[in-house]
Image (cartoon, rainbow, N blue to C red; front, side):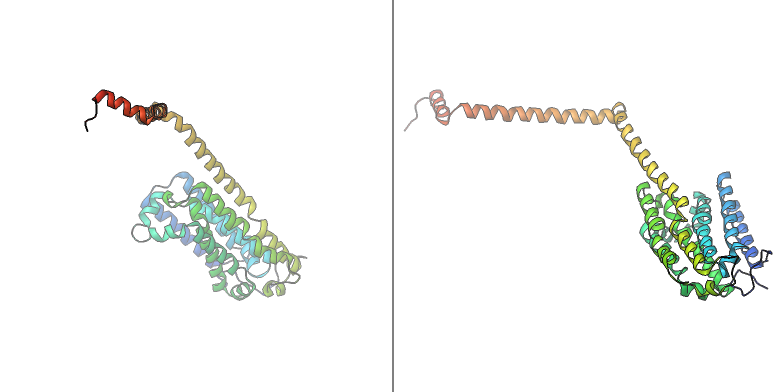
Length: 322
């Protein structure tokens, strides 16, 4: 019995295939989420909906037909699986975690590792290491031939996707950077860097994956056409999902700046603002008095010579005794 999707020498047909290992895995994840939500509480209706939507996206990316096509027939299906794991299932699952559940589950020494993984630089490096490693021809040709290897690749995709979205929408607000930093991070980590390996796949003159080159053909799609489609998906397939989030990050940053500017004039009418204004006026008055004194001294010394000062002193004190 085949428990997980892996490469196969059988010709492709659209007759459904059963993969019990995938069903058991999805059932286990669903039970884990339900038990955690009931034990810790705090999940809103929206978060519950996001959880089930993320689990559905995970199932679609893993099970037949997409899982079977990506595991042993089409490189483009393999790439589409990666996109669903990283840019659909992962953010939905991260957004579904309530802050209360995260704090109670991560109490103790687990908060710091999560904070480290939420750092944009480290997260961006790890995500793109997973991207390159799981799409390198030597890795794909080796792992996709066994159910255990294919299962491990799927887990790496899910872990990489979760790490990618932790700095953007992680459950702990204090571990998320500013909106500007989040937008720049997502632009580089998910928008720019994947274009480099995607270019190699798109413009290669020969098939790079032995697995997909020798696999039974699906319809009339040749191996090189399939690889070029996979490269195009890697380069621009995530843009419709990433660019709206990047735009939202910069828009929220602009909103915060406008709110801060509009709140500054309103400070004058508050008790704190009155105190600040009074302190400022006192400083200005003291500065004005000192400036007036310096100006009077400058003018007096410039108009009165040193000899006149001595003459005035002699008249007032009488003759100088010798």
